[in-house]
Length: 420
Image (cartoon, rainbow, N blue to C red):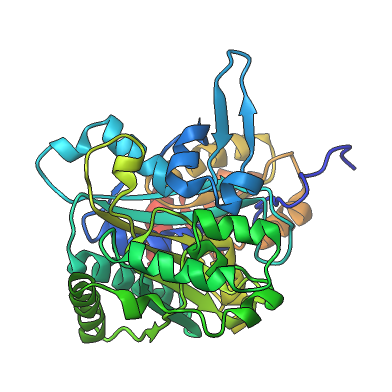
């Protein structure tokens, strides 16, 4: 037993369970790869001010949950708590927005870190796949991203998720709503910390999960009643495009996102099988974020979908993913001469594109065949001294038990024919 364990609130991904995570990542990124999104990967840590400016100093993420530290050289860094700010920073640093092809469409996958109270569906280290479309203000772009996320979930066999949709307005109409909401909040029986938050960013109070707070918010003014004509028209176009694509959604006038940078379109994917942590993903438009972190005006939109939460949602629905066995052929050699020969044939099979493995450790026939069974391989290649003397190996179907002798020269083609 090891002395060390994974830190509290984290998890290890270990075969065969880890294959689910890889399948989910592939399924979520699949529609993006077919829609012009290129892969981007950013460091696991950034300048702490990137998140303080972009995510918002008043958010719990920055004020309570961020892993911040100072390096030996005096740099103040933070483990990334979310992906959007890092991806936008990378795009700006590489001047992707100056290459004349806007929007810049990027997707990413990685681990993120927040110091939260661990519970089902909420971890201190978690995995997401995200997408960002940078540099264009177009309701079709917002609709595209929602449609692609819906397509990804449905390709996995997920059915019982809901899409919540709202508009948060823009710099023209939100200040009027902000003042109305603050006036309303000042009249409530709220603790000092919540009142302080209301003065900095009152939308954050609407996102408060405490029942005592939510009860008092029943009659809170709704942002949709304060939207300017431009924001109303924009939102209606997003709704119309999603509807035309056959994507079902619910208007949620109380939906806000926990990060300060969101404007206009905001959406969330929720699932009833995750307990209190019902959100499996979400996103929206963030037209002012580039300017917040020192870049030019670049209206943008994006989302992030939780890989671990998506796996939990699949398990809640009883969806079994069709994950192919990691090994198609398992070689069992009896005797030193057979070991050298079959090891070479395994290499040959791999070079021919066949997933093949080998019985390592000099085990006898019984132990090696147990390894073959555990590998999940469809075929076993077995050879001993008598087989080699005849210039053949035994090709065994692990499901039916049928076995046939195949010459060494014909082995690769025989295996391909069986696996076809």
